[in-house]
Length: 193
Picture 1 (tube, helix red, strand yellow):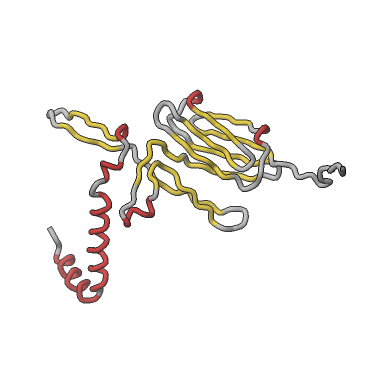
Picture 2 (cartoon, rainbow, N blue to C red):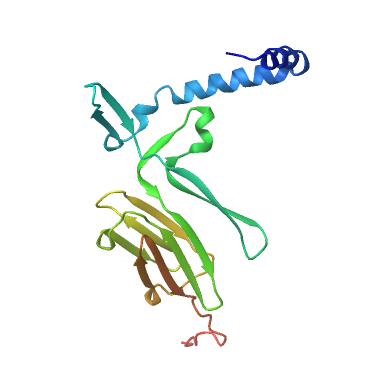
């Protein structure tokens, strides 16, 4: 039920902002198109049915998680990192949407004077289900068994010594410390033949 104010504003809005109404209709049409076949794009293990007390059946999808983490980096510029299990979300309005079985965890990369720390939030995961690998430029975090499943390749801001990696996991928070790779001032001697 609309109020007299809603009716008055509706009439004035059409007169004052005709482009806004057209833009809202276009946006509504794009959103309906994007979500039309949404269930077909969700992995089968994320679609569940359950019976209600009255005997009817309800289909549920999820968990479907999507978000951004924003922080100001040491250079003063914002660093934006996404997390969740929806891929290609910016293409949603163009029709592209993909839900992955694995989520991307919320990650923070902290550069110290001697090391780099990677902190990941992995709620609901057992320590034994985690698998970590590292090279000089990145760290891969995976939980491929159990629920929920996570996977993320974290690009590091500087090269590290992967053999120096140490990690702890407590209350759903994983912390990995890696020493920065030392640059030799004198260089490596080269034998002349």
